[in-house]
Length: 363
Image (cartoon, rainbow, N blue to C red; front, side, top):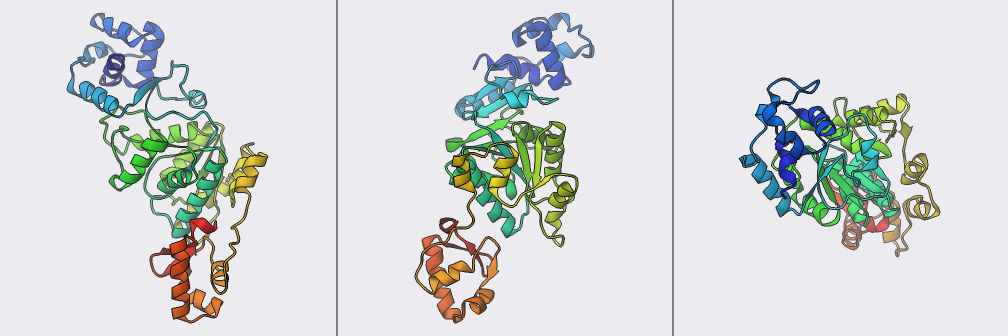
């Protein structure tokens, strides 16, 4: 990891910043050269006097710890001057100079899926379904591993046997939020962790808006599922517009706070989305293979009666067992037994409050 130390010394120089680091490399060609000239000062336009004297030593504890963490994770550093730096991200106005990565960055086209940290049950289920279908068509799902919609997007991609990239607002060694420890381990095993912040960096509030530009920058388009008025997902959508990428949104009921963001985006010209095949068509990714995978409605499952009749009443909108009792014509006890069997077989999923939706096996 000796090559990592000079980059970290520049990145952790107080007051230098991304733009200053890029200016140094453009002038001195390598971080080693820039550090060698630091004793004489950097007389470059835009860099304040005395900045060169603030370069931390190679033995600085933060630098040593960052190197150790990256090595323990089998991670690597990508710079914007490397040939395998993501080309789509390189094209945005303010690309990160450095990226810390765990896992291979997939070469396939990507779609960003983002949304509120406090989704409805429908929003969470629908996100997983869309992500699973898109990922199974060979498209990478990019999100921020936050609570709610982001986590559902990653899980859907993994469930579909596809690829997913989690862009973090902290070091790639940090599990944030902490309850996502299982998802974090899954992504390490089958996906990619990415951050512009060195290992060991805390998830500070100011990191996340910058993280959002990377999510949209890696992707052909950004889909907003559910988002309140002040949601960071709207920042991601704004970045996508500035970057010349497509913006899509799931329309929702005007009575729900989480519908505000998507409905606003649609008013402003975003593409309304109701199924995965529409996303692929908008992004020019529709193929015979992907259409077959994603264009289908909820599938019918051949089950004996009355189980088939009960399953036919379920979709991705949560339904209370009392409502299902009336529609199925069964007694509460009969319905309870059937729902239990459907749940055990994966055809139904029970949600809090005695509500049910279709299970993964029936989608």
